[in-house]
Length: 200
Image (cartoon, rainbow, N blue to C red; front, side, top):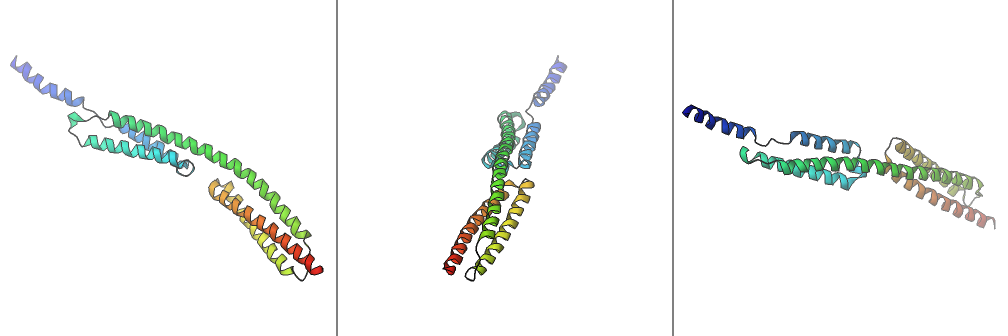
């Protein structure tokens, strides 16, 4: 009887310790992997708020895990942290999906912008060729030709970035080229009027 009681007193604590909560390593690994995948999908660039929220949730979950790790083994409870890690994974996946959708939207926008700029540059070429040239505007016309050549070079650089999937930098460059072409058209009009005025 005494021997049975002695064994029970040793076995009971061991069984109790065996049932202690384990850190949610699998969930933490999955959440970290999901966040990294979202970053690879450029969610930090194209879905910044969603990505930041996912990252903050993951950091909070890992802090909760660390807090439980610091407690005596019998009092650890990782349930809340585990749920938060699962939530972080979901949020990271959603931010990746949002980034993909936003990139596709911007790609469509830039495709249209690119077509418009091709037409605008062609129109500027035509207007420049038709512009009257005289003593009063010859230097102006040469400067406009230089400006138009630079605009084409900038446009080609924007197209290259677009083709590489660098949509945000490409959009900035396309917008700059668009403004430059508008200015060039105004300059052509001014130079043409200047030449006509000299002829009078």
